[in-house]
Length: 105
Image (cartoon, rainbow, N blue to C red; front, side, top):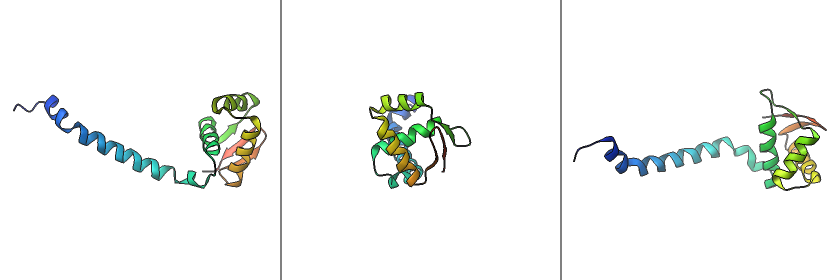
């Protein structure tokens, strides 16, 4: 059999895909162990959203429009956002109040 890239790929791709999935899972586990201290899925989702908003120094400007967008995106109330922010502060993942927060990772 002539060993071309296509033949080699067909024979070996499952091995590489499986290895990639295992590597990705291992990296995910290593990089997200801090999440396990959070008590609710909403807290994790809110924190993930805050990480997206943070600048390179971890500062977050959580304006009323950002809160509204977050509430719509997660289908939660403004009170639930406030509760999550308090949980994240209690877990020492963020600090701040009102509109100004900072990620403490």
